[in-house]
Amino acid sequence: MAYDKGSGPTLIVVPGIQGRWEWLKPTLDAMSARCRVVSYSLAGDFGSNRAVDEALGFEDYVRQLDEVLDATGVTRAAICGVSYGGLIALHYAATRPARVTSLILVASPAPGWKPNVRQQRYVRRPWVMAPAFVATGPLRLWPEIVAAFDTPLQRLGFALSYAARVASAPIIPSRMASRVRVQEQVDFAADCERVKAPTLVVSGEEDLDRVVPTSVTRSLGALIPGARYEMMERTGHIGVVTRPDRFSSLVCGFVHANDH
Image (cartoon, rainbow, N blue to C red; front, side, top):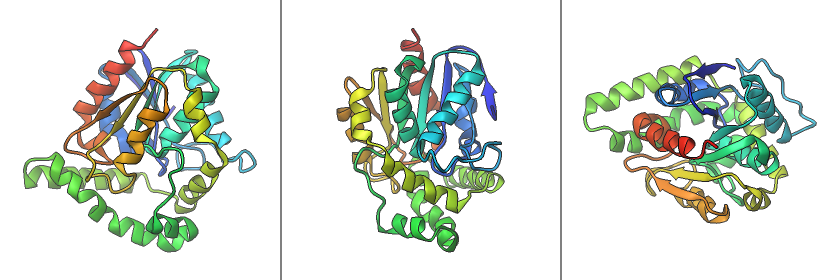
């Protein structure tokens, strides 16, 4: 695996649509103080060492997660999906219930979610729209960065460190677009009904997530039987990295409570 640190219950973290575990590294490090944390890059991305099987579509990402879990040497683990990774984690928990001790879905789309008009343009013309996607990123994320940090210096420090991680783990626009398309192959509403593992749904505040509306993520809590919902204050879509200590406490506490 690309990332495997810590001890305790095994927690596998599935990255978002950009496919790179490196974007989550501060939080992975924070969680590794309480759990054995494993993460990886999605198939088809730099560093994954795994090509995409186009014939399998979305199922290929689920099989990749099988391979990651097999490589840990444990038969069952907690699965945490971040944003698009939540769809992979959800389908995995629904189809491999014996392998999942608990499920955590973070700022994730819910059944019926569709890309907004801007996102649809990225999907249709990923390479042409890539410069606009990158250029508008700071505008989408800056409000929650302001909310998460108290001083201009803290905000600037986070923004620079986050930008450096993103630059060191570049996206493949066409691969991101294909992930949006293949998700349409899956009935996630049926998946929600089939989940047996204890489930934690996490979002940021209502007006701070400019990628997946908080109301969409929150609906997962009603669709998955027995799911628990938690809102993280002072953050939006990237609360997993703006508030790593709070996120680590919330998720690792849930993992330990359901490690049986």
